[in-house]
Amino acid sequence: MTIELSKLPDLHQNYDLSSEQRTYYQEQGHIMLRHVASAEEVQAYRPIIGDMVRQLNRHTKPLEERDTYGKAFIQIGNVWVKSEAVQRFVFAKRFAKIAADLMGVDRVRIYADQALYKEPGGGHTPWHQDQIYWPLDTNNTITMWMPLVPIPDEVGSMTFASGTHHSGYITKQVISDESHKTLKDYIQSKRIETINYGGMAAGDATFHAGWTLHSAPANPTEQMREVMTIIFYADPTNLLEPDSNARKNDLASWFPGLKPGEPAAGPTHPILYDRHA
Image (cartoon, rainbow, N blue to C red; front, top):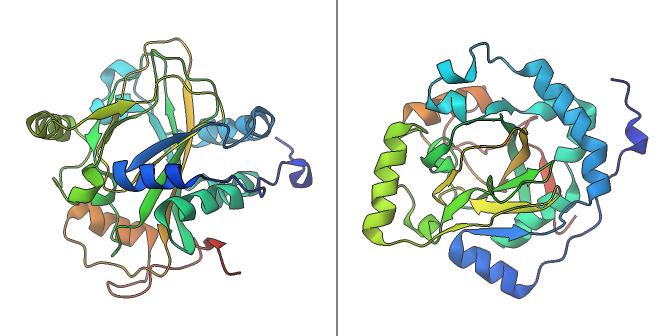
């Protein structure tokens, strides 16, 4: 695919948040924002991201033969490293500024991007906390989850357990049937409110904190649920001593050559927004 980068939308225009939206995010640990990207902007990038997902997809088994994690989605990480065009989307100042504004910080770095494509008939995503994977010494982490296609009500957004980001570690279980049962029982026993935002347009986006419990429904439709995610964290942040295999793996994979206690920085984790720059 031949791409003229200069013709792609730059996505630098600001998306202004109200004080009520910032407060809601801080209290609940999640929020849904309409029209973060326009339909035209998404349409410019969707075929580029989709082409990269097709190239990099390593699933070889049919859906019915995969485990729960494998049925949940096709997952491709750090797509921006492999495509200048995708980098233009992922590095959008607009997205990074929203992340900084919601967290109430001045600077944010990128942790990684992830394309999450839930296939027709794809299974549910079990309840989990993202931050059990990240060796970051901060609670100021946030993920943008943006559909590149309209998502009907029967598929919906992710489902969030409100306020659970205030609890920090709840379990170290990775995404699995076990994490789903443990955290579902936790939510029910604590009578925690859960919210699914329902149908979303392409370019709408949810943002959720790294400790917020969340899951996602299955895809009963015949259409691929195409979603692009970007994970941000506040700068400065140092690396933690890994306390689990999941964090050991991420430290080795995402921060090669760096040690616990050192700044969580490097060539694949640039600052994407600085309020004072």
